[in-house]
Image (cartoon, rainbow, N blue to C red):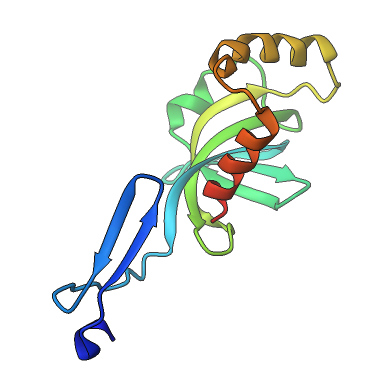
Length: 153
């Protein structure tokens, strides 16, 4: 519309400006999925495969997820992984509009021990470890609200 009516539109966010005028050529990308990293937790119900090895993790939130994994990862553990609970760090695609995860794109990054018990000591240790990063933040609640708006904008 700017090219038809000779409008000039300026959008300012933080310290950045976007100027749209009759010379601007903008094509919206249809790529609405971005690479993202996830932590999923559940029980390993299957692992293996001759040509496309994968790990099947039964989660409460997503049901059974099939996660692509390299053969050498499945060979490493000294004990059987089946029917044990784990956390798995995965890479996959996520919709930037709905935050939905593309279940067919999941690839294995790391296997994590799963401790279902709540540990106040562990949370205190994490808070102590993170505190130096927050030393310049005067209002933590406002800072968190600002970050969350940027993530879900």
